Structure formats: C-alpha cells, structure tokens
Length: 318
Image 1 (tube, one colour):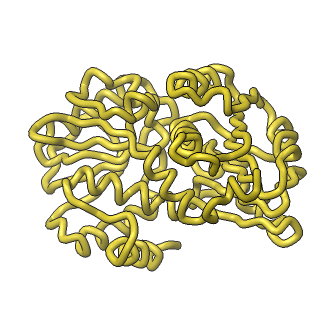
Image 2 (spheres, helix red, strand yellow):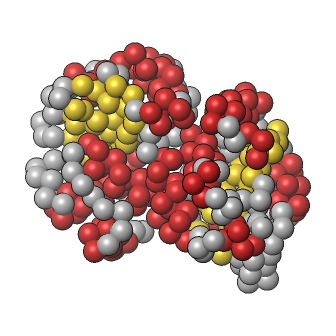
C-alpha cells in the first residue's frame, strides 16, 4: 500500500502504481522473473491509489520515484491518463507515444533523467496479434467494438487503425464511453493521427446501450471490455441479455476480479461459436515491456526466452 511519507528504498525497486496491486499476479511472478532474467537483488512494491485520485497523490508518487536513488521506475495501470495530466512537468523526458496518447504506463530512469513512456500501443497490439487469426479483418470484413475510452482503449484503437496494416483492418471500429468528455478526448487523438473518419463514437451511459451496439455487429467481430469493470470495479459493461456476434471474439483486458464480462461470453461460447480471451497475454506483454525499460535490458516478444517467461508466469497463476 502506498502511504506517504516514504522511506528510502533499501534495494533496487520497481513499483506498480495501480488500485489493488497486492491482488495482482505480478507480485508472485516478478521475483521468479527476476531470477530468470538475472536482475540481481531487487524487489517490486505496490502503490495503491484511488480511481481518479487527487493530483497531489500522483505528484507525490512520481516525486518519490524521481528522487530516491534505489527507486528504478514503475508500471502504471488504471491511472495512466491522470498521472500524466498531474505530473507532466516532473518528467525530464516523455516519449512520442506518451505525448500522442496523453498517458504514461512506464516510468524509468536514464542517466539521471526521469522518463515517461506509453507502452500500451505496443503491448495491446502484441496481445491482439497473439490470438487474432492472420488476415482476420480482411478475410471476414468483421468489425471491432471497444467498450471504454481510457488509455488502453485509445492505444488499441491506434494499433488496429494504423495504415501499415493495409486492408487488414476492422471494417468499422466502434468506441463507446459513458462520458462525453472521454469520447471527445479519444476523438481528438484520432483526428490528430487522421483516423477519426474510420471510427463510430457512441455515448452509452447505460449498459443496455452497449448491448444494442453488440447486436448490430456482423459475424467474426471482436468485442473488447476496456472499461476496468470486472477488476477495478465490479460488474460488466454489458447486461446478461447481450448477444455476441456469431464466430466472434470476446476479449476482456482483465484477468482477475469478478470477470462478469468473461462469464457472459463463456455462457454463449458454444452456441455462438465464440472465442473468449482474458487479459493474461496482455499482462505478460505489458509487464515484460516495462521491465525491459526499467532495467535497461532486451526482453524478446517471442521465442524461447519469452516462452519461458510465459511458462513461469502461468505456473504462478491462481
């Protein structure tokens, strides 16, 4: 638990800035990964902050990491947008994607400089590509519906709409949020990178509104829970009456919590020929990218080393 004032870290320490960090599998996985990667005598520590916490709480956390010699950096989840908004001036460097996405998911140090990076645009793509069939969009003419408009949703939308994918992009991308301000923010980013015309924005204050969009999706479409509901808060962005697209994919960014969205999808897995994915592979890619940044080492995203990291993590999963 994060509770200032702080004591200086006694060992090289990486932090996890989240909401319920003690419940995360990383607390069991990190020590084993550290041994396998030969990181030396180090530790991980959680910093729990409230959803949309006071800006001073974010500034205190970032200021501590910046000033403490043994504090090497952090992975940020849930608070990515709020943290950058509150702490931008405390960073000596913000990478291109962090500036573009207006979020920080990785805090590291380089030659005494505090660096903020956005890894979600990379890791969300790696996670999606791990289970999405090759040329899925081009072959099916399917659509994608991202429920939520926070940092992870923004990153995933940026990934799937990149011009480098050519024709292998969703026929249409739908994004829903409960607040107009969230939709406006993600639309502004899409306008900046020139993809807003490919997105349909939906203000959905009620779960039934999301159900109605799901009902319009053609076969093979992908429905993503990017809301945090099911982990940071209980529940699902859909009701039990929602009907998933036949032959589609239901992807929850969460892998722990009450996971109601996953239960809803699994209840239709057979009759709707659904593929159901949780956030586990996203967890693996997310953490390994940030650990690589914090400890200044190369960690591959595929191959024997990555496979062993995945095996180690899976052995600790509850």
